[in-house]
Amino acid sequence: MDERTFRSLIEKEMAEYLSETGWIIYSGIDAIKQSSFYVMGLNPKRDNANRPIKDCPTFSSWSAYQHQCWKGCGAPDIRTVTETSCLHRKDNHQNRVLELFSMLNQRPEQVFSANAIFVESDDKYELFNRPDFNQLWAACWRVHRTLLSIIQPQWIICLGKDPSPKSSSFGLLKRELERNGVVRLHEIGNGRWMEGKIDGIQKPLKVIGLHHPSWAPVDGELEEFIKSNLALASPHDS
Image (cartoon, rainbow, N blue to C red; front, side):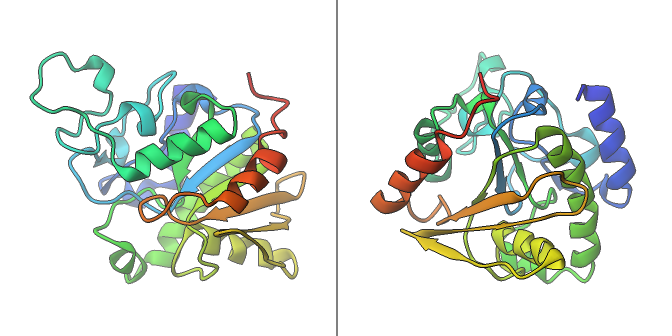
């Protein structure tokens, strides 16, 4: 998908929310291609790195986990900043997602990444208490369905594992999978996974939920599962 097509998609599906602040994709525009993985957080935390949805920049060969400053100046791409007093220190969330990419044998900029909801909030309680939350999720979900049809991942990796649709991206996806049948949860280490079908996506999707990286790293049992089951499932990536 090129940038013009991506912008048209956002303008169409997110028309009611273009003036709200947040962030859309956490990988480069060139990561929107067939690949094995699709990383999904919940939504952007309110900070000075975010932009109005209509103005969110896109980059190439880029990852917010590697190249965006979350600890000071809010620079969207620290590679372009030549004069700043900020040390661009990475926070635990960024470092643990980078560790995940290493487990997957992927460079950060290779892995498509986005939040389930593109609009920022102070916390998940503020997000889920929005009176228009269902409409907001429906708009974001239309974007995700289009991207999923292009990327065709073998695994969606959720940063958060709570199965409640009022708590995490994993819970939101569980609700979507349940529209096509019963979904069984499989516990593994400090994570869980499930499998199901989404209308418009050709093959069944496997979805794994990790303990949120802001709070805890992947434990040993889950790391072994990732290396044995996910890292070997990347024939499309280069």
